Image (tube, rainbow, N blue to C red; front, top):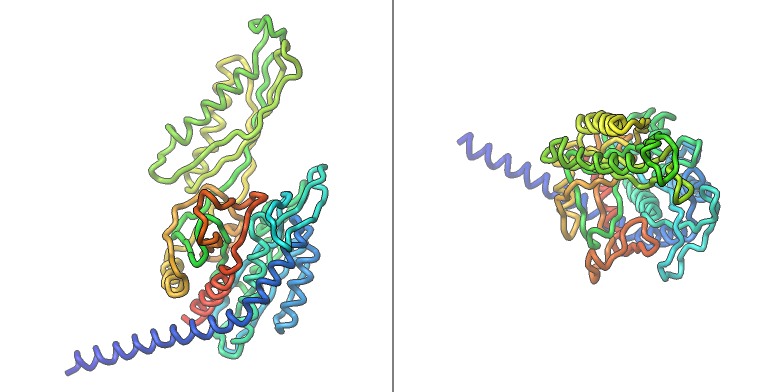
Length: 429
């Protein structure tokens, strides 16, 4: 008798849990539908008025005003222009943080929409256009929409939601600190400290209605590589009288390519070493004294990251030494690996599957995101939100950072519902 009774009781509990989840989803979806047009209007306003990193003054003001209207505690001026909102629920519980980045890129927009950016500014001593070519305008609008949805459920929220509106994800201006790293340093994750953090990124890699995610390493650590090769200047007709740093540099570039392909275990995780600039010499018949190179290092495994750094130094220095030259290697560490907590990702996956038309277990990418600085302090999940029009193929759609990057705004509501839903789910359990 006990076993059938126990089975019946368990069935009842499971049904109640499923019914509760369905009810919660419906409530969030109904609220998200009501704010959808506000979200779209907000996104267009920010898109038309883009600002570069650490200069998001107008955007920050708009965010702060909106949060205050919703009765959310608001702190401004975090990491220059960042905004932190705190929504305290009507019941005690844990703390969940939701993050959106705010900055645009030095890109001149070519998308033919009525709200296209006409903004221009000076960047690295050059006059440039300014565009939300990476979709951060959508991120801000989505998170403000989620804030309004959750504020409407305040009495039933068991815990606290922190809203992190972050500047300078694309990097701070020269000579300045910025981004998630500075937000953490200035206490954005303190008082109260979140138990979990979530973020999303719009992308043209996936169609509207799709959420893509990956447990573990999802996006790469990024480091900047600088190499100066010093030889001995001489006449171009008599190279044996000097040491040619251009030839040595070319050998170093080729040698660096063997690190990800031959020297580290590529079956553990992919990596890449790219030289993006080489500069040396001023005349066709003069072998110069030195050559400068800069590049990027991408890796998806922490131990491999350290190993690659060691091997880069060894490769460059010893190739240079073999020719009688020297190589000075500088590696500046950048963003850490975006690492999705596996247990949290497993809990979030059913929510994504309930809400999205399609979910994708994505491959890791060698792009980088400074959301990783939050994840170093708090377990978190970062995921992709598809915003490619359904009638376009991946090959037809412009990628993020393109002057033709386009966001299908019908996908924004899923961003609102997914962020609000994972927040409530992790507060409730």
